[in-house]
Amino acid sequence: MSHTLEIVPYEITTGSTIRHSTLCEEQTVLEIDAQSVRTSSGDQEFVYPREQLALDLSVGRFEVVS
Image 1 (spheres, rainbow, N blue to C red):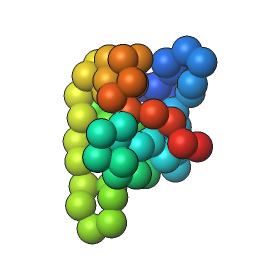
Image 2: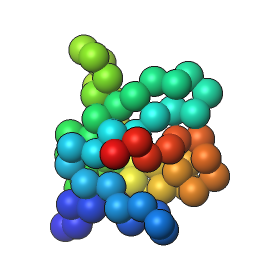
Image 3: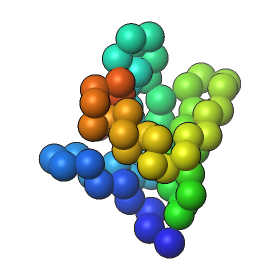
Image 4: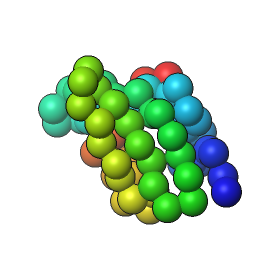
């Protein structure tokens, strides 16, 4: 089970911050497992399929803040 998600040139790990490009909403990565990535923003939690988040990052729907 990998606890990182690599999208060249970025590597996302637990604690990384990503931002939705359209909504400008920042989310903190809480957990990465083989199937999904769990994030939070304020009091909301989101679960993304790992492959979908990788695609969204590669096409610019999300950007890595830190």
